Length: 156
Ligand SMILES: Cc1cc2nc3c(=O)[nH]c(=O)nc-3n(C[C@H](O)[C@H](O)[C@H](O)COP(=O)(O)O)c2cc1C
Image 1 (cartoon, helix red, strand yellow):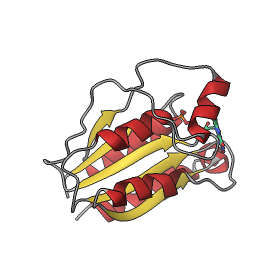
Image 2: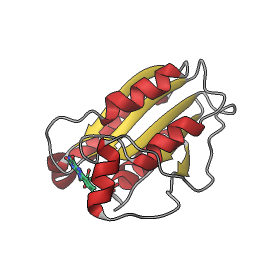
Image 3: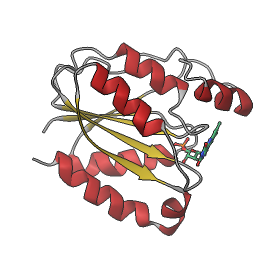
Image 4: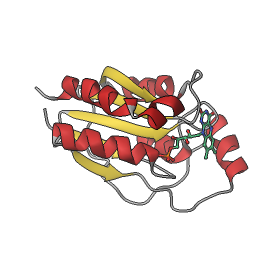
């Protein structure tokens, strides 16, 4: 399955997991990068309010792929504003498979994966699953095993 991994990462944690997945499934990776950075509190408020920040050009046309995996850190329980914008800019996604990958500092609940799933399904995509890596899993190294398990969905 030809897969595109679209990843936003502010401090590198999500990118580490996304790159491991990329290596395991031999996918392409495109970086979602907001045009400008904001203060911590603004980041959290804008994420909570589900705002969109303009992003630098990256791969948004999925016509050459069978599957898209959208990766984001969890901010204020939600997806990040750059990822929200990316979801809006997607083209030629209908009928394709998709999944979500998020990392977070805590191990509590989050709605980021639900929001990403909703945005992708609204555009006619078929959601395959999610990978959530919390703070404990990042520190213990458990994330690697979880990523290997997740990778199996995208191998055929
Ligand atoms: C603005 C902001 C808000 C955050 N909100 C949450 C949160 O609600 N829950 C949580 O578990 N972690 C939260 N975190 C921690 C990040 O989700 C976590 O460190 C993540 O792995 C960072 O990924 P990155 O290194 O790819 O940017 C927040 C971090 C930032 C910068």
